[in-house]
Figure (tube, chains in turn yellow, cyan):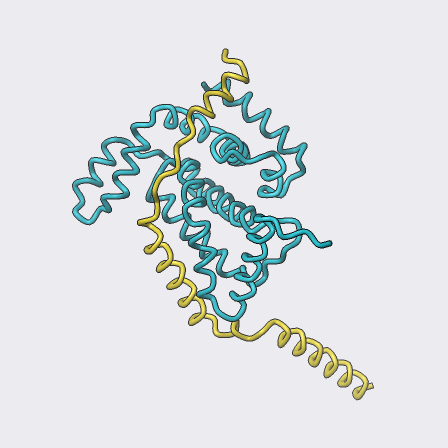
Length: 72
Length: 192
């Protein structure tokens, strides 16, 4: 059985050199942008800034509290 | 007296500016994409030994990154480590879906050649991979391990990352990374 050091050397020797993948860049970027646009079209609520949700939640809680106090 | 910024700090500051720009204009993400695309693609390629799959998973990685970049915070992780983390998760997710990624055989490459629409550059890289017997042997052995061991071995020996960086990418303590590395090597020794 091989020694650990031999396995480490085997892995280091087996490293695949960096491939020139620049030609794929354009296609991948187009894919990323299209996916993002499709996502935005499908979910317009995502355009609302996060603080809006926080504010809406606080207002809802306050309304509920006032309602409970009023009923009492 | 204040010391001038080191190149690495300047680089980080530049990335921080890009991330801030992404909040108002997502096309600013292109700078990050151009900087890291090749590195992430090559990492995924070394994990999967399959160019088409690497292309798909790289696209998925950057899709996820562009979705979450506005929420990215500079805490204890660099942008590079964050992208590697997303890429690792994508590969592991794919691994779980398919159970095992089968490296391309010569027949499959021949089939790609016969397809007129097949990208010639893609075929060239496939050929480069197939010619590299040492890589094919190492990749075949690594792909028989658990995904967590695959990730740690690829990052250490193929990407040349330090233990600290691997810990950052995999969100694990450094000692756990060392343990995973040792166990992965022992398992690989049995396989080889």
